[in-house]
Image (cartoon, rainbow, N blue to C red; front, side, top):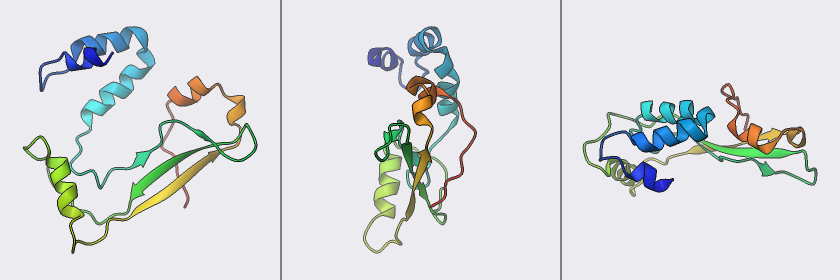
Length: 133
């Protein structure tokens, strides 16, 4: 499947890969299209989360997911022209003497995980969730 994504000319959509996904995993096509609309300007303003749930505690029906959310105060600006502008912005922002970058580490706990099929839990589209830290 990786070769399908790499076959597209640089700067062009991977048509073969999109066709493959639409035939084999149509439920994922909307997610794939949403990624295309999002433009990252700095990796330090994005929220990061675990893709799969992890077992939590001795009960088989309790699971959790992790998320790291940046605190506000980081300038974003426009996307850069160079292919490695994200790396350059992060290195510059984390250089000695710069203000610290702070992320809140959050845990979402689900107590009825054992009642759900893991595949459904992984692919179900959910509304934005509130996390308390």
